[in-house]
Image 1 (spheres, rainbow, N blue to C red):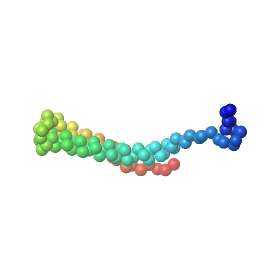
Image 2 (cartoon, helix red, strand yellow):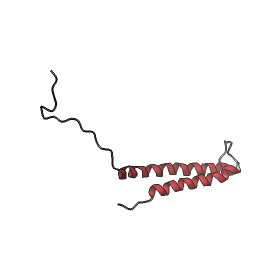
Image 3 (cartoon, helix red, strand yellow):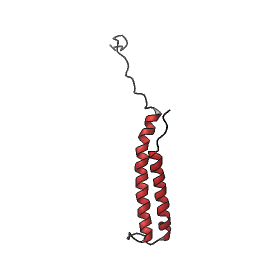
Image 4 (cartoon, rainbow, N blue to C red):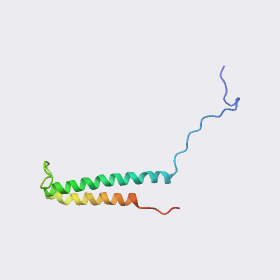
Length: 90
């Protein structure tokens, strides 16, 4: 004999609703700041390798990395600014 859940007043399990969009945006901000920080660190290391201050790599003493390093670091700063920028509440 199979019991019918409706005859006993039971209810079917209810799945939780997905979080609102503003919660997803709030969770994205720390991720952007963290990724931006890592990109800044990588850009500074690349720049220092390009200038020859950090050795042991094929990038050591290369003008290409002395130029690309600061550009990469600026990209990381842009990610941090986007992550920290506050938006008006609607």
